[in-house]
Every structure is written in structure tokens, then in C-alpha cells.
Image (cartoon, rainbow, N blue to C red; front, top):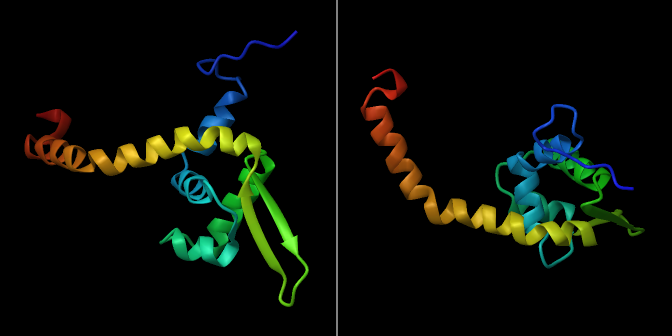
Length: 124
């Protein structure tokens, strides 16, 4: 019998997943891998602002979680490719909706932030 999970419970392991998905680099990598296999250096170029170290750490975490598959191709130099696993693909539409929601709504968010700041914030 499956153990019931409750994301509101402090010790629920689903919180680890939520923590991973709250990371902007993880979301951007998952969105970028949606639909195609990508080599490490191309992924680093496409996800602007991410360092090589942070990208490597992010990919390792996503691979550990079963969301990303890493394939090493024995070339000189070695080629490494990343793709979404079936579990990652299952998550891809949700990640994409979240990422593109931010693009569609950033102007409203920036306006709300400016209005809030103009009032002096929460203390006003």
C-alpha cells in the first residue's frame, strides 16, 4: 500500500522535490531540454548567466532525481549530452507553463512592485 504524502507536513519527502523545482536554474534547464537532447556547452550558452559549476551541479541533481539522463559519447574530447527522462518529460509541460507565465506577466509584476515600493512597502 502506498504511503500518503502531504506537502504541508514538515517531514514529507515531496518538499525536496519542491525545493529542487524552486531553483531557477533547474527550471531553466528543464525547459531548455524540453523536446531535444542538448550538449553541455550548448546548454551553458543557451541558459545565459549560469556558471559552468552551477550548471554541472544542477544537472547532477536533476539526474539524481530521475528527471534528466546523461549520455557520454566516447569521442575526443568526450561529448556529454543531456535529455529529459520520461519522468522529466512528464514534468516538462508544467515547467514550461510556469516559465512562460513569468514572461507573459513580468510587466504586471514590475508595476505591482513599483506601486508597492512607491507606498513605502509594507510599513506604510
